[in-house]
Amino acid sequence: MQLGVSTSCYFPLETEVSLAHLGAAGVRHAELFLNTLCETEPAFIQQLRAQCKETGLDIVAFHPFTSGMEPLYFASAYPRRIADGIKLYRKLFACAESLGAQIFTMHGDVKTNPVDFSYYCENFATLAEIATEYGLTLSQENVVRCKSGSIDNIRRMRELLGDKVHFTLDVKQAVRSGEDPFDMLDAMAGKICHVHLSDHTVQHDCLPPGKGDLDCAAFFRRLRATGFDRNIIVELYRENFATDQDLADSLDYLKQYIE
Image (cartoon, rainbow, N blue to C red; front, side):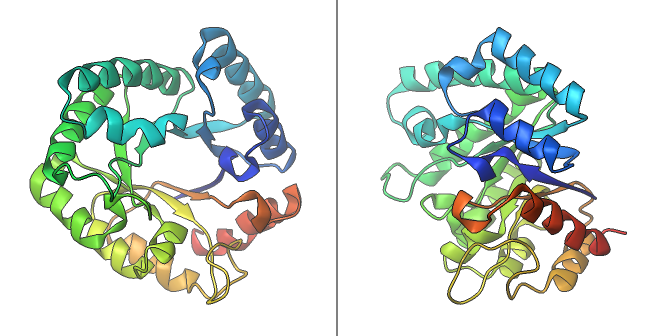
């Protein structure tokens, strides 16, 4: 397992500024959250590549700013939207590939969309196959506002897609969905390729690892038992930490569970 931090922790700071903060904190593995369309331009991606090389940062995962558009493109009854969505995501896949990422994370369809979940799953499978052309594993994240926030729907994706589905386990999103993170882990077991880690208490649903009630030792044991050996990414919101050192301290705290 490798430990890292997501640039999304610093949102709404610009992407390159967030990367600079991670470099200053001594982070070596990162998830990159691209924040707007102009950041997909080749010159900007090249700038990010140069910045990562200079600071020794390895981009292990990629998260697009287009998550909110995924229901429109991939869970819509209007067929031309699907074609346009695939075209857009090919561009995003190319960005992720250029940055060296192995994982590409999606949020997917929202709970309020009346379109049957199986239709989204079919389109996810199509995207997952396309992602492999770019050396990427397409990963479904559990998200509170999305159908993927439900353990039942995670299980349904597995039943419908088999080997074509992989998951990003997000601890805080499980908590916000009213799902036990360990139960979500079990539902995804064997298909988890990426983890967003945070801590929590009854009063606070997102805290730095080691600052809440999550039994990290048990959590890492359960992950290992599923065969997971990929990246554990600390992902917080900006109000959940104060300084770069807080993120560095989170990684230092977690090292005891991977050594």
